[in-house]
Image (cartoon, rainbow, N blue to C red):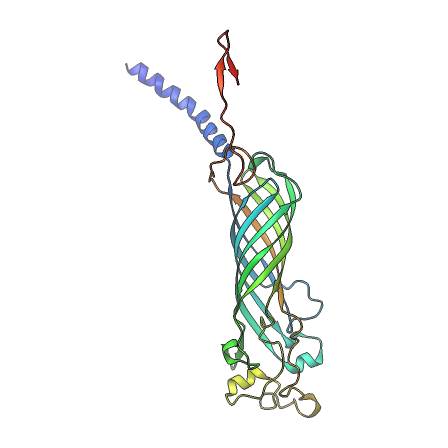
Length: 302
């Protein structure tokens, strides 16, 4: 009896590597319909306080999302981005910009839903996808922004101060549009390089859009309205101090925008949507085969 138990144990130990390999192979073979994305990169602001000719400015950006394929070439994605936008007249080359002396910094959140079309089609299983792929995407999103600036070492939110005499929403729709390049790095992972431009529907990302208003009686508000006021900038006198009520402060004919440049990791989650074959969450299920026996006892498919 002891010899039999020993033989069984030896047999089980011998089969363990094959079992482990089989389980690992099964884990890869399972269809994974959901893809987790996460990445980081830079954000660049375009508006009244940006420098002309600036294509990319390295400011922090972090994102996380979830996506799925609905066909061999089309995928849908929901994503959350956190990033920083900022601009300053002090960094401009134009003397008029330097005299205006406005600045802002904003911590932003963007929630978006996008669709992408890929250049190359996926295989009939997720792990048979191309080694490299290029895609274009667009969609819609919501942006939360909150421009701030400093006065005497303290940060102030600018929208509640109504520096141009108007109130604006700090939640606005945006339209993302861009391109990406995907590299397969393993059965369940990709690395992605992506650039996306965002068209917004506001000209107040930087709290600058239209004209100067009459100085406020509140010194803090008055400073943010016009840091070039002689009360704050004694050198701004005579012809240089033309930033008076009614004069141009920004350009309302063009809305602000921004650009996100990211490096991401895509991971295929061990989640099976229930489909047996195909390349999308709504792929066709495999048809159930019908069989019957022939006269010789073999299996014959209908």
